[in-house]
Amino acid sequence: MADPLLEFNGVAYAWPDGRSVFADLSFRIEAGEKVVLLGPNGAGKSTLLRLVNGLLPPTQGTIAWQGRRLTKELLRQRDFARRFRQDNVLLFQHPEAMLFNPTVREEIAYGPQQLGLPDGDQRVARWAAELGLSALLDEAPFALSGGQKQKVALACLLALDPSFLALDEPSASLDPATVGWLIDTLLESGRTVLVSTHNLSLAAELGERALILNGEGRLCYDGPLTAALQDLELLQAAGLAHRHRHRHGGQAHAHLHVHDWESS
Image (cartoon, rainbow, N blue to C red; front, top):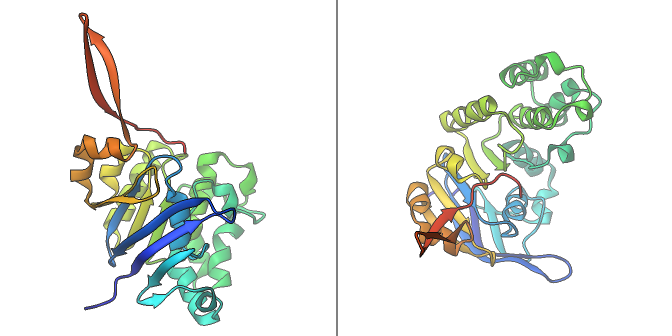
């Protein structure tokens, strides 16, 4: 049986002061899967994506990439690190953390240049055109709007032609047309995708499988996304829905309502 693309086995993470973010996470992601990561504020979604991308080491358990355990020592190996950084990319929720070059053109070109990839100019032109950035290539990234910055950050990643794309709240700053383009691009590509979102209305369009973290940082669901979104009791237990009481004609009623917000 072939190794999964990504595997978490009993993974836990705690901050240096000892505060636990999550514990005992175990799941596998196969090549080509489209997985949506759901959970309330503080459940550890952004931290999990940083672990997936090798930016943080687990405090317990193991993370494997293509059957090899991700360790600090392995990520220091030049050949492995170059392949890993091209194949496994992360779009931060706040793109300012990813942008540091003088112009949009240099920003998109930076990753391919660092990894020695061919056709750098063509990569820049292609993804700038796809994301409507062609007229901004000589602009300073810090001067752009929040949505434009997120488009630049996304273009930087796609220019690497990664096989695995992790996205942290990608629709938070994007206009509806770009969100639609992003959904089509992700679902029609052969890339493996792991995307976190608070937007339950959008979640159904982003993938087929759901991983749900509850407020205690535990994986409380791993299965079909459609079934999860229809299970209001599950969503309530995970902190993604609440029971709201109101009155009709002197009678008190309680109804479940899903949380559908963008900010974290």
